[in-house]
Length: 371
Picture (spheres, rainbow, N blue to C red):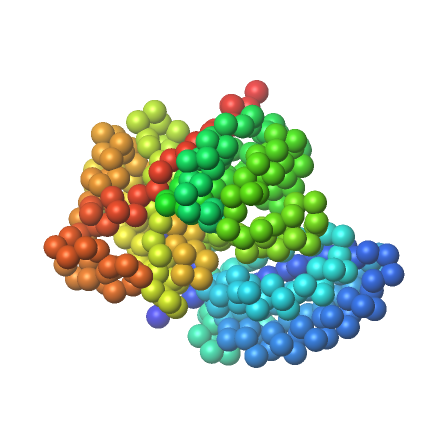
């Protein structure tokens, strides 16, 4: 059954569309044979991953050091479950050791020739994206990590006191906004980029003021990292990545009375995707409610960690306890069953849940308007 998504949904992992993943790689000199052997091992492993349909390895016709790996998946959640796993990190380590640069790109399949337009001839439940989505060219990304209990105050002070890097990355890419939140000892940093996300992340990581902050929080991290070691840094940020799985496009997000909130939802083991889907549906319904306060919403999910970033307008925007309305008993029950820590006895609806899961805003910085 085809799911109809609103035009305001500019990104969704939950419509059942097939996913095409493209990995562009530039190899170190002399690493071609070693890379090919590593891929041969990986392709046999990946063939058994649920949701994987096919993959191709391509070598540049013009430059033998440039390679392209494409893979096709029945749906985005199946791919994300694999790519965000510890097993994946170990599987791709030999490939990464061969490359001076890697750039992953992810696309849902909208149309194709040779199989019909309804995706009916595809294996399993895979199908085509129903219609083009609308967007404003903004890409959202998040990182999450934990710090040692008891160090939260020091970490918050470090993360809130730094010089913002230059917003302009190049002629096509610009940093738009960085928001940073904490919930207990968990840190979540979200970034909004216009243009090339990977170029923006590289740009930020190279800025002296950003590197100084990252070095300053190193002693407080629960998971050790060495930013001077490219492999250690790569593995840390790979594990910290918190992909956006659903976004409702902003409408008036720059208004003065709009407030940004983040909420952290730890899911029961294996329930992260279902929880992310549930919250996405609630936010989409809220965005279309006449007189509603929701301006935009992004859901980030990795394994059983779900983060909900919501922009709310009007007087309600200042208080997360009243910003999200109330769930009816049935939906409140669904939410409780998906959470690792269900609401306290006697708590009903989403207002108590919102207050309990609300993250503390550490800093929210917008880039200055372009000239």
